[in-house]
Length: 526
Image (cartoon, rainbow, N blue to C red; front, side):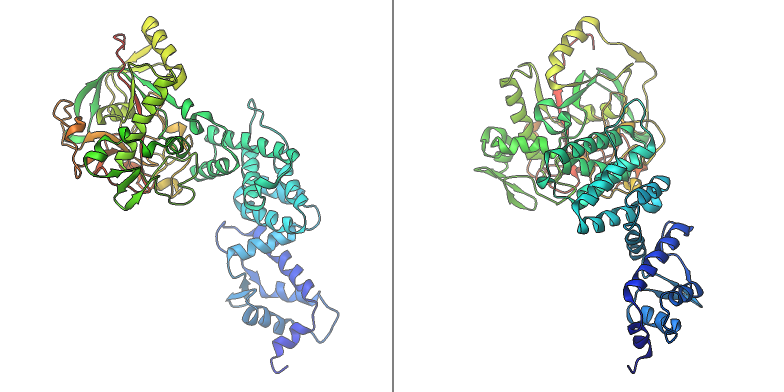
């Protein structure tokens, strides 16, 4: 009792004080001009609110404010007669507590749909608070945000945002392994909406990346991403193209081939691991020659292992590009996949799956003298039919001056086209999040996301395919092998079609993946 502020605190109904703070946080958050930081609360507003809490004439609001700020830390003084909450998350949490009262969830959903950026965290916090009272409340919030499956003929941005935050609330609060069949129907609806968010490309890159992460957690249904036997390939016609940049730019040419639309994903690489690929010595030619493989164990840069190195979420989510693998592992995967698909009669014996040459990679990104009027992207199972059709009918191509584009999509950089530093994702993203950045042949994410292994020794330009750089026999233990494409931390204006780096075949890291090609393509029409 020697501390006057404590005495004042003991004279009031603390539940009423809490409700007052919730109300003030809500009012402050709603009227705050900026969408960062905390809002100002005038001292007089605090005084008036506290005076209304009690009929006790002995309560002194000034002393009570002193307790709330100096002892409890619930508010902080920012200036003369100006207070605020300690940080924005606390302000948002108190606002969420206010909104979980009457008219929940209708009121908070209306606010969110009017201003998603302002009310996003408040909505998520309200969902987390509501589920402590009853699991039914979180499902009420999810249903209010997302009432049914998407109508692909008419999808608004408001619907995309609402479904997006509903999925985020679900992932953050509900154990998806412990839900009923009826609730699974709502989950399936949200999965459809998450696919729409990724495909529509209307939300910012960081939001699409989050949608992709949630899709992985809820169950990504895309066979081209999750199923090794449904990988999609893009046709790259033969002919000339420009290679390199600046003074080193030069004309090159290569025959037609098919290249993976996306980098190989964790789910697809897991099929190789589960099939015992690490234990079959015939897939590890170079690793054995360099004493880097023995009895299913690869000796990588950071130590021995029998599976890709793990880096935690989101890097290890099944729909993300596989990372943490060496060049040896990428080559072993292509040999296993060739054998698998030929045995299953998915791939002709005249074809093989391998890593792209550096020339194939750059042509896939930049385009050449022949560009199909419409990208020809097909699942692996359809390639044989496509070969016959294309050979018979040729392909409808546009012949223009050979492009010298800087990026797969054109000449101006844009954070919406690639997972780069400007996209503010700060990690790998699920494949398919950047379809607007596709190359002329339909290949996606050749710029950003992950560096990609090629099958080339890194040598200077001009590029000559017969100078030994494509000879696997000449790759030594410390040979620098070319990497292409840049990664998620790269600034967009450096993630060019011509960007290249290199590393020894045992190099492994969180930013290195790969994609594959199907070759040779011997159709003379192309």
